[in-house]
Length: 153
Image 1 (cartoon, rainbow, N blue to C red):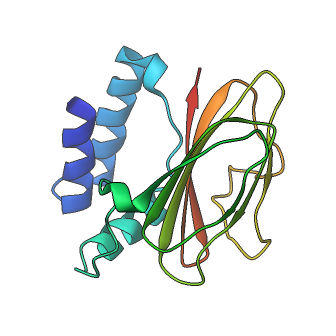
Image 2 (image 1 turned 180 degrees about the vertical axis):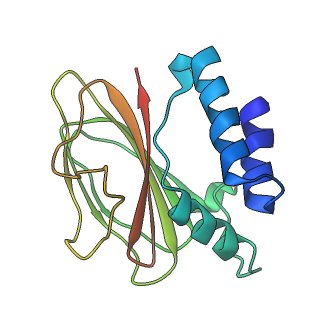
C-alpha cells in the first residue's frame, strides 16, 4: 500500500524529486524483494495517456486480456491489450502502430530472447537483447517508447 501511495503522490506532483528519492530509498531498504526498475518519463507519459479518456485502458476487462501459451510466442499486439505469457524461451512482440500494449512473461533458468522492432526506444539501463534469468518481465510499449518492470523469482 505504501508503494501505491508513493506512485500516486509522484503522478499527482504532490512531492518533490528529493522527497520521492528519499521515500523510494526507504521503501527499497525495507522491502528489497520488491525492487523493480522504472523509467519515470515513460510512466509519466503513460499516466497522461491513460488519463486522456481515450478508452484504451481496458486491461482489467477480459475482452482485452489474453493468455498466451507456448515457449516461443509471437505477439502482434493491439492497442489497449494485455498479453500474459508463462515461461518463454523466445518472445517476439510487434507493438501497435499507435497506442499502448502490455506483455508479461517469465525468463527461466535460461535467459529468454526478446525480439522487438529496433524502432522501439528503451530506458538507457535496459538492453532488450540481454535479459536476465529467473525474472518476470512486464513490457509496456506506447507509441514507440518501451517501459520495463522486472521481478526476480
